[in-house]
Figure 1 (cartoon, helix red, strand yellow):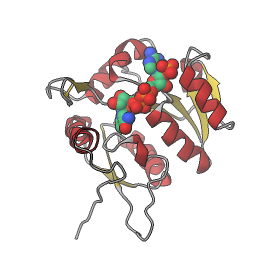
Figure 2 (cartoon, rainbow, N blue to C red):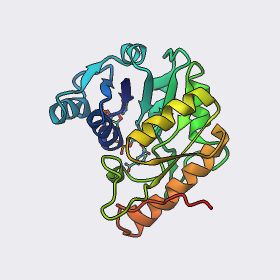
Figure 3 (spheres, protein in one colour):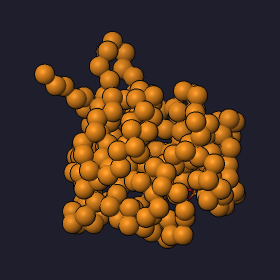
Length: 209
Ligand SMILES: NC(=O)c1ccc[n+]([C@@H]2O[C@H](COP(=O)([O-])OP(=O)(O)OC[C@H]3O[C@@H](n4cnc5c(N)ncnc54)[C@H](OP(=O)(O)O)[C@@H]3O)[C@@H](O)[C@H]2O)c1
């Protein structure tokens, strides 16, 4: 299966590199082939290919968005996702590690507005990038949970398969409006680690009985 990555920095590279190792074909989507992060990614993993953004979407089954939130509106305008899943890995972060949209609406719902031809699924945001290249833990059978949310069942099932392949336990938390709460979970993790110095390689698990 072919996956496109718009944004191949900390998050995009860790995840794309993990998934390429699991057998997925990775296309780095960027209209500027000279981009530093694109060049770095192609050097670090010679199995990656690069294409302009729309061409990458056209040849991929699923697209990942791993860009700074503030560029998303302009970036997504005019792209045709043909009803395919768009995995929103981005977070709107405001001053003092607050919610960048003042908790009025999730970033994912804004992305769905800006990319109406996509089926947006929020995933891969609730932890730092340090955990995305290899979520497995020594001496533990338990897999860390990756919570995801979206409105389209078919898109969510496809994304859940990718989450499970990447080494996480995929847990559906509901419709896209739940993304607001996932974004707050992100702020919790970010404040613990980036502000308060907690070790970055920690995640949560989902236990049910
Ligand atoms: N860092 C984390 O631990 C973490 C964890 C979960 C979620 N997130 C979220 O994930 C997103 C990415 O974070 P990151 O740390 O991976 O950022 P990053 O390392 O700065 O990478 C950003 C990527 O986006 C690309 N980009 C920027 N503007 C673009 C545009 N207009 N069009 C196309 N590509 C563009 C950059 O390409 P160029 O090199 O060409 O600029 C780069 O590849 C953010 O929304 C962040 O909140 C971060």
